[in-house]
Image (cartoon, rainbow, N blue to C red; front, side):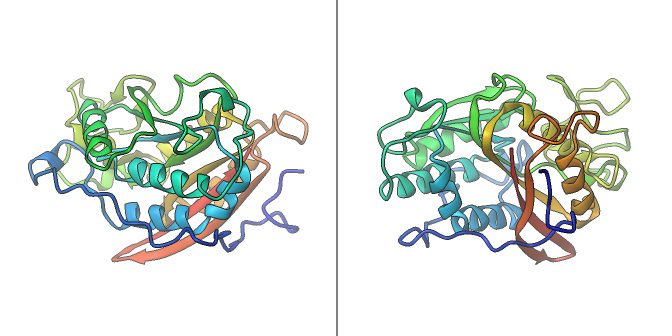
Length: 286
């Protein structure tokens, strides 16, 4: 049965910690300059909330025994390198990997780590951050849209801090007013035919309160995840997270109840107010 709670309404569930896995350091990004951050997203409060939520839910990730994990839109690569360190710490406290793709696992993490970004600057930045932080789990950073390059059912764990600002609310110095949103494999279409600046793709969430990219990601993640896999998704309050959670449970409403209809479960595991933003991290289970 696909549900958020007995009343079929979204609810907060405390993350599942893992003894001995806490206080992991934030990966170093001091190899970047202020000018670099004009080309890809600089780690901010939303990034750090996602790090905290992943660490706090290490017990859930341990139970999953992921063999293939991927981050969508890694930007600077800070979340990816943190995830690599987290997986390595979890692996020190668990037995052999038993996920559907265990044959590709690595000795230090028992998990192959991939990244996908439509911004070529972010692709190179993620590789550099992995190098500077001794992230040996990172297998590849692919220039691509969402996780569409992945085979269906091939991933156990997905992470995404999507662009979540409404297109019309972006400042002029970032972009001119346009339709926003990501088109498959093509980056962002501003509607004026011009190539967008790289930072546009990290900020523009499209229409629907900035939730356009997140909505597309739900379908892509559902396709890419193996049964029982988890999708960690960060959302802002204007995205109407509860509505997105309801959508996640019924992506294909014409299908009978079950895994083909949508995610099996959607729970909020972390919330934080950062300035004028209220952010939350959701764990969606395939």
